[in-house]
Length: 306
DNA sequence: TAAAATACCTGCAGGC
DNA sequence: TGCCTGCAGGTATTTT
Image 1: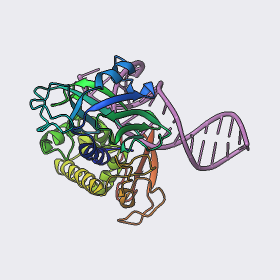
Image 2 (image 1 turned 90 degrees about the horizontal axis):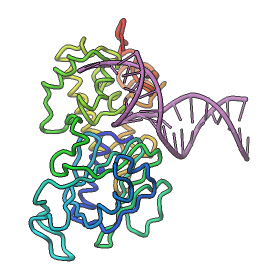
Image 3 (image 1 turned 120 degrees about the horizontal axis):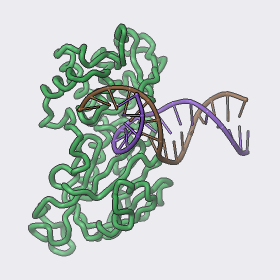
Image 4 (image 1 turned 90 degrees about the vertical axis):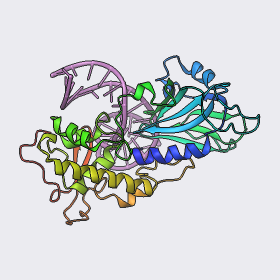
């Protein structure tokens, strides 16, 4: 399940693999993959031809490739060479993508056999490696939107993530305290803090010794700051490990799995001993998904509302 | 207005 | 072997 560390690994792969290249052809093989592109698959395919990718950016779990149309680069490149510097003359369009639960963005040689769930294929004018969007469960998708150099309009509501240098710790603590909900619901709300999904929410709450149903309005400021520190720690460690490939649905642009699954302390460890106190990790159904906690380290709040 | 519930979607595991 | 059910869960939409 791609969360912040996995998406950042993919972004870095795109930076290496497709930035500076010009799109020659796009093939949409499953219309659902471009359902958020309001003018349809045919327009999606046509609009990208000739566009040069100038940057690979990320906000939370969203990725986008900044685009420059022919003539938009302030220093047009020599044919056959990369345009340099890659600086569009104005804020151009963006190819916005979300991996959903099972999406993969692969940069592979054209001779690579089609993946079973290949949804979109991008080929480039240099004839080199293709970009492929592969997605088993089709929760992910791509669209062409405005705002490539800044922040695409459709994701203006997504908050910064805790690894963003401009993330505002004080605003997060204040925002958490102002809510009337449970801790995990708040951590999963991308308008408050982005990049956290089910796995890293459970890991951070375990590390902080807090139960997912604890009311956000009962948290002391020091506890909120401690939780934020644990969120940062787990995201950083996961990023260094190349992400978590819990069910093999997440891989990098080179098709490599992450290694953080080995380091998980709570998520997916039902019945296993807690790494702190040896109590058995328990699994609860919560928000139509699973939550994993240590019953000793993370006691359920009395009279918990969430 | 905020919070909670629901829909979307496919592959897989397990039970019968 | 084949069918059915439950589960995985991020986001947008709908309901409360």
